[in-house]
Image (cartoon, rainbow, N blue to C red; front, side):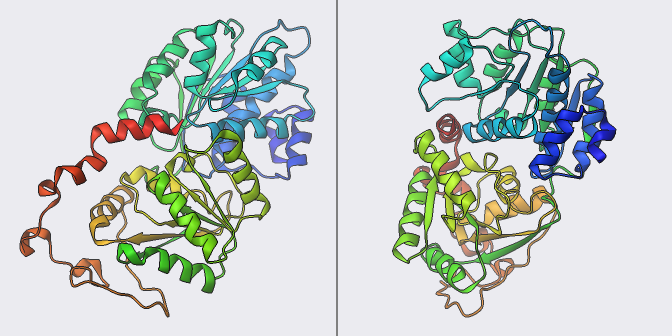
Length: 424
């Protein structure tokens, strides 16, 4: 058993086997032995490579060994950007640690705080939390960090993108200075390095693959299509191609609901998940998608890092994401844990600029293609091959900088701040 060679305890190894895992991923192989030794870590690996187990297993091993005779209190804190990720990590802890009898609580907004307060009063070993709700508990005085030994920042780059940097710094300032700190992220930016410098001591840097590139197991396709025809193309693919577990990404909550309604009218069982849904609705949607009740789940970017569903056959970008990093995290929902998957992106004329940003970010040029047996209706401004489209300056049409202000504001700083605030 490879996990046994990392120095993990027998009960923990039994829990790993019970979940069905037998071999560690590359990030796990490199991170777990270092974490078991108690060193600080910066782990950078692509989405879907097994980062969660890379920090969960060392924590469980440490707390399981120290369970007997220890003082009471929260021993480990895991910070994560979204509710879905908090639930996912909690489930991983419960699965791997089923024979360790450690107590875990996921703390996040969108649900009643009273149940969380009650559970905290009974004693907890590990807390998985989103920054906002954790700060609520800190202000109430309902949580104590005096016994913290291990801190994890999961998806650190996403927390920075969503505007949590000040909240994270406030939380870290309240923790004991003598602790082990692990930071995991899909990308390592200068801001991440700055954050690390203020909270870690001589961390070991672990880099798996190129952080800009999606996992190699994912086959990526780009389909140029007029906006009004996107829903028709989606329906054509779902009805004519072998797509059994499909995650569709929309840029907005309204768009996600609209796509879901069109799919339902066409007889395709689907569900929508976004920040406008309650936590219970979101969890029910995830559970139904995992179980196969829904063929399609339509999501906004809030779910891009919070969905851990094995067997997703296709990720479809109904709207091209405005930020290249979001593209990587979206398509990373398929091709997970050494599986294969397909990522499909619909690109309208006004989204070509976003596609070009993605190509630059991942260092790859896409070859646009047409869907067989689908009847396209193209305007003169949108040929089948985007590479042959004249630039706006040569045609005299408005460039990005001269568009009406109402359109420019869609990706402006204020809109970005509102979108980030609404996600958690």
